[in-house]
Structures are given as structure tokens and as C-alpha cells.
Length: 289
Ligand code: PAF
Image 1: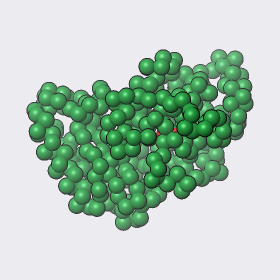
Image 2: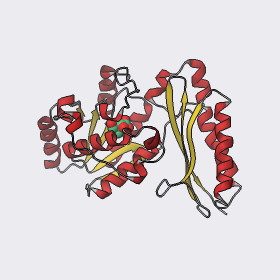
Image 3: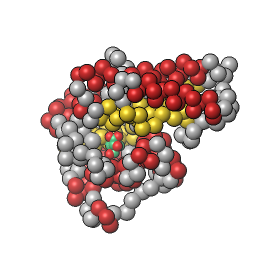
């Protein structure tokens, strides 16, 4: 595996691969890799001949009260796992490479509407940071395919929107969430949970599964009121095991707007604080006759 820090070295490696008629896949990460990330890499390897993974903890997607300095970092282990998987290039850009100008003067990429909902409401700066860094990474790597986890469902939808709106010739692939045996979605943020909280944390996916069961009784959404009742009951279930729910919304898969009467392709999106960790999760639901 070729480890590079500079954009010129990254481009030279990608150009050499292209000369050999290889297609290029890309997986952006913030490091501290777990099985979920490794699935993203495998998905990229299935779709492209040459795979680049980046590790960069992006400061602009952290809020003022979020602990950027303590974000978990395991660089040696990450590099070992990626080399073992046969990744071609590990891109480790420095802060000055990703943000050569002062952060306040940096051009930002903003995806309206979908970026203002849910996590965008609770953490207004977060998605500006994600779309800005991902668009810079796309320009540096210039991949054919880029892979993201469905765990960050809203992020994936926003990146799809940005890719279309900015005419990036990149296929965006979403990969199913990897979970522990109890159903907790793997996340670097799970490291902030105590053993007891890890047990309770599985209730987040359990509650979404409960919502799915309740909704499956309907062939399609009956009324907004019926959804509100279910969302409130789901919040109570989370509170009962120590979560502070931020949002649980039954939305349309197509645009992530809250579901309306007659909708059948749904996704429940949720965020809730448990101890020091802010956990997010989601569940796709297809209502059938
Ligand atoms: O999903 C993540 O880990 C990050 O948001 C990403 C896409 C690497 C951008 O920093």
C-alpha cells in the first residue's frame, strides 16, 4: 500500500492506475477504522480496480461544543487493516492541504433543504463541513466510484445531491450498516460509551424495528397524526433506557422530507444522546399491501 500525504503524489498514483486502464474507487474516512469501514473498502474493491482510502479528521464538521481534540485516532492499526485488505493508496492529507486558506475565508459547499433537516438542525455547521471536505477530496482523488455508509443516511443523501448538482462524474454507492450482535450500529463514537451504555444503546435500533412493525400494519401512511403518535411513543421508549432523543422522524426515502399520507417508501431517521455519545441510526421501511 502506497501511503501519501501530498496531492501531487496522490495524483501521480491515480494517473499511473488510469494509464493501466484501471477504474478508481474512493472511501473517505476519519480513521479509527472498524468493521463498518472495512465493508466500505470491500464494496469499493468490488466496483473498482484501484482503491484510495483517505483518513482525515475534518475540523469543519465538528461543532464548537464537540470534542475534536479527543476524536479517537489509531493511525498504525488503521494502516495495518487497510494494507491487509489490499488498499492501493492511503491518502493522509495534512490540515494545510485540505484547508490552505484560513477556515473563515474558505469557500464552502452547502446543500440546502436536505442539509437543513434533522442533524443539520441540531448541528448547523456539520454538513457544510462534510460537503466542503468531500468535494475537495473528490477533486483531489477524481474517482469513478465513491463509497459511503448508510449509517449516516442523511450524509449519504446530501452527498448524492451535491454530486448531482455539481455534476461530478462519480457514482455514489451506499453500503448497509454493520452492527454488533445486539443490533448497535458500529461507530467510532461507541468508544465513548460505558459497557452498561453499550447494552442500552442497542435499544436505538430496537426502537426503530418496533416502529417498522407498527408501520407494517399500514399499507401506506394514513395521516401525519398517526406518525406523530408513533414518533412520540418511540422517544418514550428511548428515554426509558437513559437516552435523550434529539429527533425520530418517519421520512420519505426519496428526499428525506417527513412522510405524508400515501407514502410507502419510508426511512426512520433518529439521533439521541446516550452519556457522552451522540448516536444516530436509521431503518428503511417499504410498506406493501
Ligand atoms: O463519514 C465520515 O466519516 C465523514 O463525515 C467523511 C465522509 C469522511 C467526511 O469527513
